[in-house]
Length: 199
Ligand SMILES: N[C@@H](CCC(=O)N[C@@H](CS)C(=O)NCC(=O)O)C(=O)O
Image (cartoon, rainbow, N blue to C red; front, side, top):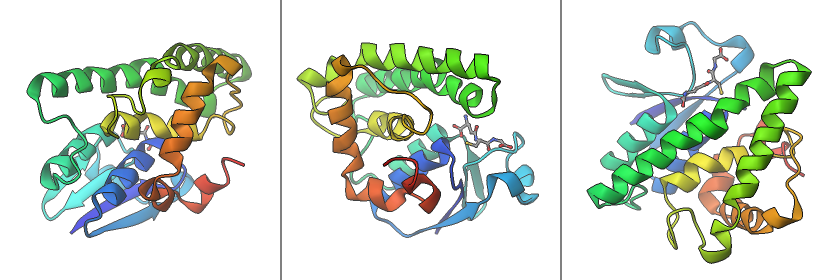
């Protein structure tokens, strides 16, 4: 059985929880209080960060690496594209989300007010730019929900919580977000502390 050590308010852990619920297999989620991390996290992950996945003698960290492993172990429903070229492109997208979007989360959660404001502005601009894509398609890769939607959704869920209000022209992106938020796996994967992040 897979055991996921997951931060109750951690957007990266949320990605892994979503994938576990989308797959509907047998797993256990171990809730970890981020402000009171047990020492065994550092023993499993040299970077002392969550999430961490343990399956027998396999220990994995980094949300996207964990998620690709789960996707390969349990191929239904497949969340990465089956074609190698499309899969490589999907990985480039995942990389750009980290560099351009999720890199701002630390500044919002832990930075001073100037750093927070800069990060909010950057996210506001990047997400607004992305919005027109969803006027033409349901999900990031087209008509099917994929790993890219999993990766982006914890940030979309936190927009209110992070004090980011997108402009009217981002309506297609917000509709897309609602489409993800209404998925049963997304709802099941929310922790009580995440549920209260959105009204
Ligand atoms: N790139 C990592 C980021 C993980 C990360 O930053 N996790 C945060 C919580 S959301 C963490 O554990 N930070 C260390 C700490 O709070 O001590 C991933 O994708 O898993």
